[in-house]
Amino acid sequence: MGVTKSDRVFAALRGESASGGDRVPVSAWWHDFAREWSPQGLAAATLEAYRRYDWDYIKVNPRASYYAEDYGARFQSHEHRQPDLLQPGVGSAEDVRRLRPLDATQGAYGEQLEALRLIARELRGEAPFIQTVFSPLAVISRTAGSAKFVQRLMRENPDELLAGLEAVTQTLAAYARACLDAGAAGIFFATVEWGSADNITPGDYDRFARPFDLRVLAAAAGAPFNVFHVCRANNHLLRLLDYPVAAFHWDARAPGNPSLAEALERTERAVMGGVSHEGAMGGNDPALVEAEARAAIAEAGGRRLLLAPGCSIDPAVPEGNLRALAGAARR
View 1 (cartoon, one colour):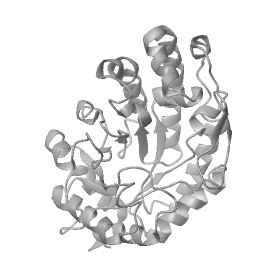
View 2 (tube, rainbow, N blue to C red; view 1 turned 30 degrees about the vertical axis):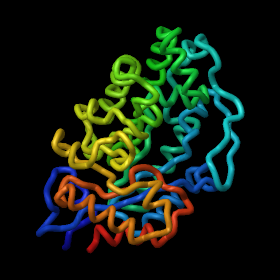
View 3 (cartoon, rainbow, N blue to C red; view 1 turned 60 degrees about the vertical axis):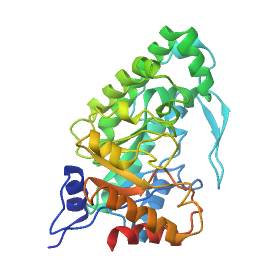
View 4 (cartoon, rainbow, N blue to C red; view 1 turned 30 degrees about the horizontal axis):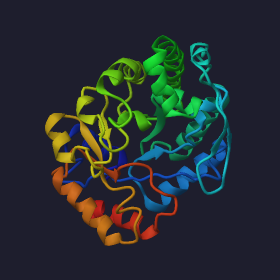
């Protein structure tokens, strides 16, 4: 029997070749705005993309609103773009203080777990998959519909914000464990806007993000494929390399962000990414995608790298770009 996809992925996470100089693993992900509103639709869209491009691993890409829906936020879905916020779930500091832990097996969270079970049932261990979980701070900003609202709470109502973060953290910790029980090999833990120094200072990150992040990650600590996604340009990645995950994912080509090589010098963990999700992937030049992908592989020395775009890509990305990304890993 040859090298399996799981062999390839977990060898990369360990920093070794799977067998005889086997290649780096590769994947990409995007939204299916029309179908991601039901467990069946999300599972079907995820598996179709996986099979079409024969990815080595799957990052499930659910609708971004699901984290906030059970906290009272209401959204309008669209077929070709992100949903619109119709009504926030919180609008004042007291609303945030009154947030309570949710039953993470019910509601929108429960629908996501059903999607994971459907994916696991179809894959039968063929490839590892991970589920996206936003950070507690990001869940509050999604529930409010405003990062500025949360920034104001940091300055004017920190106690109310900390109380809300406690409730959300308890929900997400239970949800992370449930994702693993549903078959996920780990969680893809995403900071969203709070990964950038443009939106939060190091001091505020250490007070309002780090302790809550670490509690969610601790709930998933037994999983072999936890990934920390540090979003946006000018990110905080180099301050967060002590997070207990198997791999770090970020846009290594965005302004102010560290390169793959810089991060690899500072951590023994694996890295994920290497190709610009908006630049190369968003253009119409497969040769540029291949060049960036091959450069990423060379920069990492072909080890401790899971090749991918730096973030979720536009669903309208040309198929040729996706084929070029996959081809660069396989040649």
